[in-house]
Image (cartoon, rainbow, N blue to C red):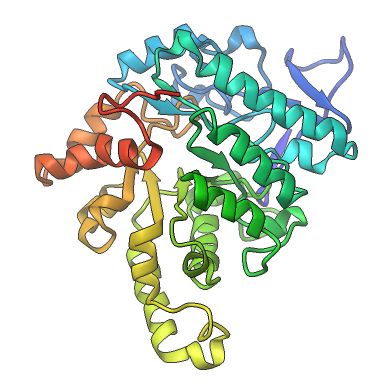
Length: 362
């Protein structure tokens, strides 16, 4: 198992081969192992290595609703929105497979499980559904958005950089049926770092630490795409959200984007479609999520208190669990209580259509 140059490459052994026992997901040609990075909470940092594990070696909160709720209680977390693992962060597993009919069935089955089981009655409204779309067909994607919106779902996964998956960019009109469905139903487009099936890196032999330092970079590239695409002028109610991208990089990107729009739009290919300064588009349409970003919080005025949401990265290796509350108190101590309330709770309630209690009412 290797993870160099931003690429994860596992090789499945045969029963009885030397090496650790590992549980695998197998889907057509995809062999996806469970790894310690998938479920690192509760482990010493020195014990978090690139190795395969079994479900028995995972913290049960990684896959069990009651145990997840218990770990949320321990971490002072009321509600959480969870991204997929085996389907990958925006359903690439089903998109990259050959059998589209089976892929569509799997997307729908995953969404039914997400709504009816993971976020079902046993979760008490504390787990917020996040569904998938068939990325290979924008029309089918729109149908799936509307199907799930009808049962209260307010967030859907998407790729931060679709061309990395062999899909159209947001600079085309290929996604319009999907975007229109999200715009009309109030469904937030949620993009997780790595949802383009690659992490940022600098060379084919760069160690994982390089990519881990640069995890925000795909979000940075993606934000420039969206701000310069004209999408927000065409779909005025659309909202997008970046998960685990942190926020400290945002002020300069907005500053630079505004300069480019003001000075270079004539030759930059955006004069006829980006009708407002990018920073205004960001304020109205974009939300950044963070779990450990003291620098970003010191520059919150340049980002917008209404545009950021607090997260925990449970159960991954970067997670602040079980110290998320302590980290928030350390990094937000200079902020007014009403601003802290917006960041850790109020913005999510408004964005995701939760009840006043912060629960999903689907």
